[in-house]
Image (cartoon, rainbow, N blue to C red; front, side):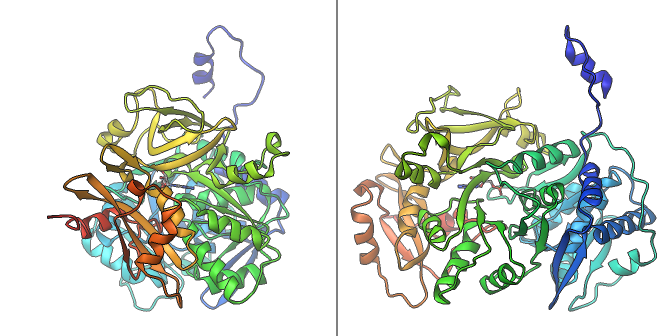
Length: 548
Ligand code: AMP
């Protein structure tokens, strides 16, 4: 390590500072020493289990010993196939702390995609939640692998022959482990993107990037997490490490509450109430449903102060409704490739005297995290000004941003510039106050008669309609205009609404050419593995809509 640093120093003189590696172990050891009585709470079937950090630490030690006994060596890949639960959290620490890599498989991928990622990652062992046994078996049948082993966590509805049992494995193991010192650049956690196009692509986070991301995402103008917080990550631990919360929580000593599969509004509300949750995070869909349930029951969640919402655009109406319930809805943007946090939307002192402007700004995806460097470029790669109007593709690089895809040179060559800038595929504006606004994904823009229509902008207007629960806007080939926008909408339960009413709603909010040619009422909008609209499927289903 020291040699590499001094090589880079050139004519400067070496500092006196320690080169101690940034590591997941340092987060763990700090948590054990400074916050031993803080809590890890997890649903487990019908029960709610409670562990102190100290008890959790002993289970992590036992698991590390069991992994060693199973023959897991530094660099080996160990897969998890699990909800947010305490055993998953134990894997989050034990696997990287013995030098191996935890591959957090997205359980919502299709079985062939799951088979693909297990093979691509060359996972030796798969730890799965018993409730997910059917999915694991289906994926395994497609990718039998060479001697891959399975460990079941908790009860399952049907047996999986040959699978080992987690609790039996760890039962008699020692509670301590002689943790090795690991190079901070070593791989720790492997995540694949949710694949709206092509095969999933892997990002392998290092100990260093995980540590830096935890520090930066804890800043007051990021997630602003404190020791006194009680945190409920609704975002799954198989989606970019639940946005880093399993590491940030232990770093600051917050209580960490895991919902397992209960992501339904009743389950979320119940945990928020019984556990006095102060901070939560997740994609808009979950919170739209929670908002509706709170309204229907005429309830508030008095303990819940902050809600970080990202993964796809938070509808303006959702932010306003949550604010009205006394919850600070904080918009954030990020990507798997960025660990994931990129921007977070908070108030700034410059706008303290202009609350209306500040409110408008808060709808946007937010201001950049200091560990992210960014550029906005036009189609020929020239920088466009951050004036709030000029649109460009956002390029990023940074201390917790990947510089390539895992074992995928082709995808790397397409998405990364030779000097490391990563093409996010998001078309954005950045304004004079530094707020980023995502206009659309490059591939979701609708090209109509030489003009570009932002699907996100139209969706935002539709989502504000009081009788619409969801709206998804996409382009369909058109003989005259090249493409025309079409909206698929889902009506709220118990609401009567038709195409004319939706058209009337859009009439004074959108120019005629931006207004969808068709409004289709559907029961549900297809989604990706992490709950984002799957526009590719809708484009395919309705591709012939405008054929003559
Ligand atoms: P993933 O890697 O699955 O988290 O997906 C990253 C992509 O999700 C980004 O490139 C954006 O297109 C989209 N995304 C994430 N957060 C937001 C947000 N707050 N608003 C709009 N799009 C978002």
